[in-house]
Length: 347
Image 1: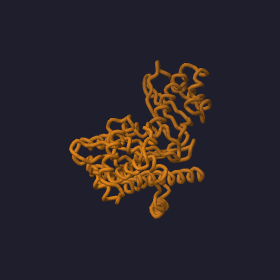
Image 2 (image 1 turned 135 degrees about the vertical axis):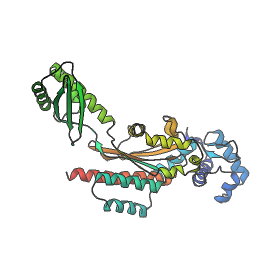
Image 3 (image 1 turned 30 degrees about the horizontal axis):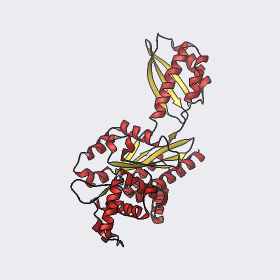
Image 4 (image 1 turned 30 degrees about the vertical axis):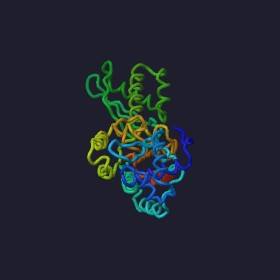
C-alpha cells in the first residue's frame, strides 16, 4: 500500500493513534486523541479522518468498540518512519556497551548478555544465535570400521566443529581400505566448501564417491542448522501483555519456544535475505507464519561478513514499542559485530 496516498494530517493522526495504542492497548477514540495530544482539530474532524484511514486499511474497528486500533498496514507506515528516525538515547548506549565491556571475552557470555539486554530494553522476547562460519569448510575425515557393513565417519570442519555418524555401506570393507580412502579424501578435500566437494566426486572410486555423497549431505544439513544454540530471554514480558494474557495467542509463544527446530527455521528464514548491518521488521508474521499473525519481529544479522555471522532479534505483540526496539536491535547487533571482528583479528 502506498503511503503517499495519505495527506500530511492523516499521516500525523495515524502515527499518533499508533503511539497511543502502543502505550495503552486500548482502542483509540477521536475525543481522547484530541485531548491527549492537544490537537488543534475538532473531535468530529478527527473522527472523519479516522473513518477514512479505516477505509484505506490503515486502522480497524474492533466489534465491541467505537474506537479504532492500528491494522497491519498502519504499523508498516509507522515502522518505516521508525527505521529511519529511531535512535537509542546516548545514556542507554553507554550502559549497554559498558555491560559488554565488563563481560568476559567468551561467546556464551556475550550471547546470554545480548539476550538479556534486548529483552530488558524492548520488553519483548529476545532471540540470539551464536556466530558461526558462513561457509563450512572441510578439514579432516576418519573412517572407522565398527561391525559388518557399518562404518563410523568422524568429520572435522575448519573451526574445530566435529560431527560423527554411522554409515551403512553396500558391502563390508576392511579397515585398511577405509584408512586409505580417508587419507586420499583428506588430501583431496582439505579446505574445500560443500559446493567444491560436490564437483569432485567424479574423480574418485565408488567407495570414495559414496563417502563424499554422505559427507556433502552432512555438511549441507549442518550449514542449514548451524545457528546452533538459540539464546532467549523475556518470555514473561510478552505473556503479561493484555493481548496474550487471556487468549490462545499465548500458546504460540510457548509452543514456539519449546520447539527449537521451529525457532531455528523461523530465524533462518527471517534472516536469509538480510546482510550484516541490515535490519528487518516482520509484521504479523509477514504472511509466512500463522502462529505469529498477532506478532511482530525485529531481526538483524551481526558478525564479520563472509567469515562468521549470527542473528539477533526481538519478538513481541504487534503493538511493541518499535521506537525502542528497532534502535536497540540495531545497536546490540553493532556491538556484537565489533566483538566478533575483534576476536577474529586476534586469532
